[in-house]
Image (cartoon, rainbow, N blue to C red):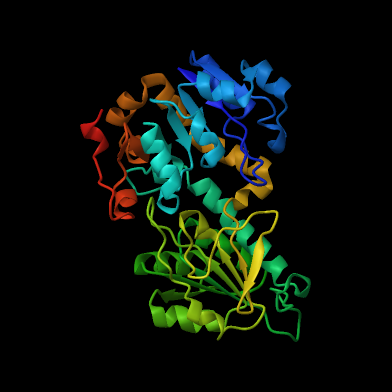
Length: 370
């Protein structure tokens, strides 16, 4: 198979889909690898390293046109839609439930879209989402703490406080990988931390994990509202794989919250869990709505690109090699995790949660197509 890797063009996205070490693995397995000039520079990987690993360096259009499988990090942007071709396997984060235009473009071009975020193992784990969720969760506290500073429009609160002053209150909505990592950093920084989740079993696990150092609350509208109104920093960490995120952070909360409190919506890739959320960029990461600072950057881990690239490609390589070695169709038959990752195939939507996000989209089981 001919494997391609194009440079990311999303605003301030410095990650790359393949490292030189990944290229070596594909070449060793008998595949040809095409990499766009400069693709790895944002993560500290020079073109010469890719060439030494066995890659052929080309311009973007030639990489897209020449590859059977494109390995990326973020979803393609409209400028890249004309580069799609029938039968292309696109292996990347897609987040289609929040992007109807992209979904339609993939369907029209009959692209085989394999989404990192919906590949799921038998135990329910999301192995290609986990590393970026870990980073996003930890980074959410780093960014949230910064935007609590008065110079950024925040209320001027130090998370840990100092002796004689109160600690900041941090509320994490969602106790999955993002929420757990956010809570870990928040407790480490000395804040008062509350984690809200709909799973009592998960709350029990978090209580054990943190030794009672975090307050756990069952997710109800009343509990969310009470916690949020007393919060200095709220982290939105809600996820339904492949589907739009429920809006648990309500507009009505804003006027009752502390002026200058910060809301970091990590779920913004899937539409966000805040009614007042809209996507921002690293160039212009925050906006203030009714006195509350909103941080809604759609590619948060891109800010720590080298760490993120290495963590992500450590996880994606095994699945990418399986697709390249067997072909997507055989990989889908052999590996249920990869089958769950296929969101679009032959002009049809093959992810049930994605289809359920739109009233006029039908779901087709991928196994009936391969």
